[in-house]
Amino acid sequence: MKTIEPFIRLITEGKSVDQLKTAAQTEPSFSTIYPNSIHQADGAILFLVKDAIFKKLLIVGDNTSLYKEFIGEIRTSTSGLQFKEAKLSVANSRLIRKYFPFTNPVSLASKKATFGLGDRLGLASPGHIRILRQSKANPILAQQSIRELNLTGRNYAEVLADAVWAVFQEDFQAGYGADGDHLKTPVEVKMALDEGYTMITLDCSEHINNVAADDLTAIDDLYQKFPTGKLREVESAFSGKEFTLKSGLKLSFTEQKLKLNVAIYQGAVDFAIDIFNTLIKTAANPVDFEISIDETMTPTDPAAHYFVAAQLVAAGVKINSMAPRFCGEFQKGIDYIGDLAQFEFEYKQHEQIANNFGYKLSIHSGSDKFSVFPIIGRESGGHIHVKTAGTNWLEAIRVIIAADPTLYREIHEFALDNLATAKQYYHITADMNRIPKLNTLSDEQLPKLMDQNDARQLIHITYGLILQAKNADNSFLFRDRIYNCLHDNDDLYCNMLEKHIGKHLQLLGLL
Ligand code: ZN
Image (cartoon, rainbow, N blue to C red; front, side, top):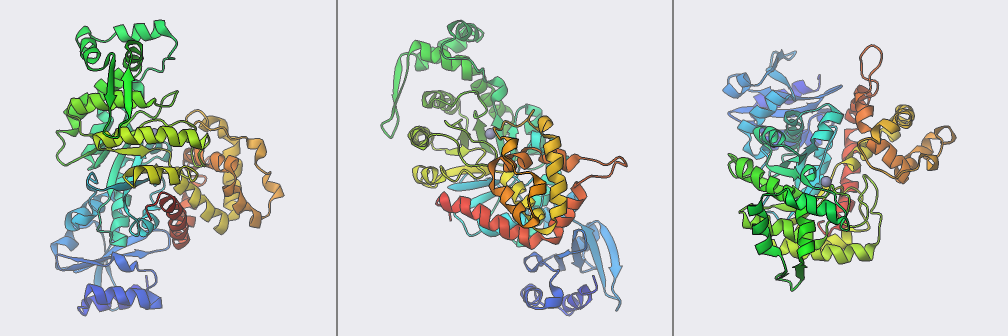
């Protein structure tokens, strides 16, 4: 912190924010200061600085109420200048949101393209902002499912706080969103909304019945469980009818096809309507509502997509985006597996349905799906939401491989030993026998592992176990070392994310 003294002197001499930014950018001894983080409010100057293990917020202006409000230690420099040193905590992030409204997440419903960037470590957003600010898409910087929260040991307040600090650090004023991802219950939705999340992705999977189209008895049983009134309603709306979309696409429902759709999706439709009416419509601020029906056994038939959407729209639900399950496989952290022509054929139909009702299609597990991005970019015309998460963690692993290969080797062995546990909650088809044995690889060869699908999936799905593993004395086995390594190499991590997420955006036609 020795170099801070002359910088604080500049502030007390009354230099403007612009002059301070220039000094931070050009003076080598100020290299630990994040230039874009220098802000002024209430007569005080605030900025972020990179310390040995953490980033810290420094505040100069001891006669202001802002200075008194932030929680931190009062420091006196060698020449008697006073400043406050504050942690990048949740409580302080709430004060940043109060004094700098641009750091609050907002609804992005009016934006044509949005891009979800799950950041499991809470370190990736600066890199994400640097590339997204050059693109046509607005970022959803905070985006976590309950599963991810459990696996990383974080909560919604912490996830949002990390995004707030990144937005402040990078001075990103174009607007970002916060997505309570894959929420399944009213309690979960409420928890995310109470923390200020501006997007809710409702996971309807627990209200979807995975019944086979030829299992007529099961379909009939499920059908009859709905109240007669509800059944008469859907029958009169769909049975024996053909619908022509604005694009000319025709979708029709025979009596049996309607029964099948009711059996599979009616519970999800009723659930989504209920959540919308009780929690989304009544929320204090606008909420971007996404309906997720992607976690099913079989791809979503276009008619089924229409069946769900038409009922939601008729019930007054304002859909911001919808995630059907597309054909082929969208496995975590690797490219699309499947028939591209078939994908294009079906994607076009889903796009026409989304267009018909005016919402965006949402592409889940969008990490690294490079072979389908050109199709998605073209057919959506850039009106799209794409979610990524795991790939940002894998880029962090690339940094660790480069900076601390010994740590990577330990992580890799641990992941292999614990793979069976991780497979209980992530579906992958990786074959561990195809991963080269670590002891046959030199440190220089290690980076290649992150280009190999089986190794990518191994490290991808074990992230929670890696981050939570403990030693006998209850200290973390890897977590602190991972955070320290990424802190020491934060520029490298930013650069890798810019490049890698940039590739996603470019292929989607958004950059
Ligand atoms: Zn999903």
